[in-house]
Length: 137
Image (cartoon, rainbow, N blue to C red; front, side, top):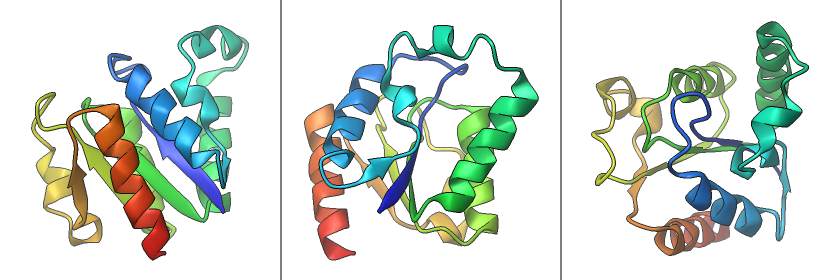
């Protein structure tokens, strides 16, 4: 399965350790189109791309993906935009959220498309949630 992993980039990188653990788990059996989101130094590798190119690439990856996994713990315009794209493209979504970091946006929690929010407190819990969710697919 091709998975688009969504996590905060310009909104803050405080959860990059969780992103890396989740991406490493997903890569065991799937292709992660956005594995760079879990790379601490990846901003350096995108420095040659303009914003329009990044947006176009990411939207194309969402279209290509079989599943979107999004960590909504850090409020992020980019993650919100990616989730809106996933909904418009009718992509299945698994949402992860650490309630100790922030309150989940009403734009997400109030949207019936995203009714299955999975709360976690550390990387191990996030991976355990994904293990269970992916086994049920």
